[in-house]
Length: 308
Image 1: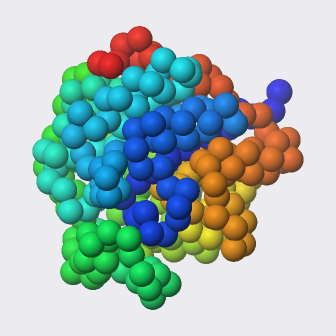
Image 2: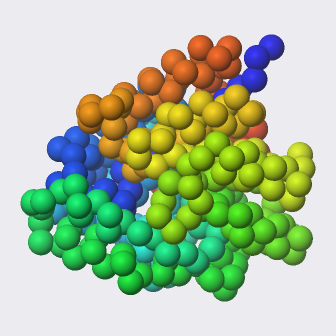
């Protein structure tokens, strides 16, 4: 029997702005449609952010999440993953509130403070639709994305009390060691879902050696207590997915991480990227995990135990 691979789709995030792609989902209806399309294409998990429907600005309120998480749950069997990362400009209380109140099966958790440089894209986009976009991106020249041990413990403890498990987002080697610290303290519970992130300025790069290094480190720290997944930012998305899948990894794609569906071709939907990575995985002789198979692999509480 071939190995089951979990595809996560990150539907919309805080990295890209509306001016970068006309296909970026902004409204609750658009986010729901993109998420459901991704599930129909093969994603088991949908990782979700919210945006202001008028100007696309990242927002992190329960009221913004509730319409589309309810819609996705009603119309699919997807594992719903709510961000606690939000955006680098938000406080930890603001970032945690939707996951705290909606009690999803999975929430994301950034495993360390870091520089989070989005400003290089300013050299590629000359005009912006909304007045918040350019200052938001330029502000990351002098911004530390704060994820202290206190912040991580707060999110981890409160989420665990609700039965929520975590997608541990690790942007560099030290973040794996931070996770090992919480595992040693029994605040993080196996099986760990470790999402190693490649290609964000301020984190580890996209070279195959970087991928192998993160996996070797995670293997040494966590042994059989974790499931490994990867995401590659921008043009490296599919290369990193294929490289990691060949080494036993799961994959994350979606318009949060990359706007593209091939060289020079903007993805029109999140499903475009899911279909592309699915073709790669199935071409390698791998099988795609269903949402219920992902629940079993990650030991999740189940879709009927959430707060929405």
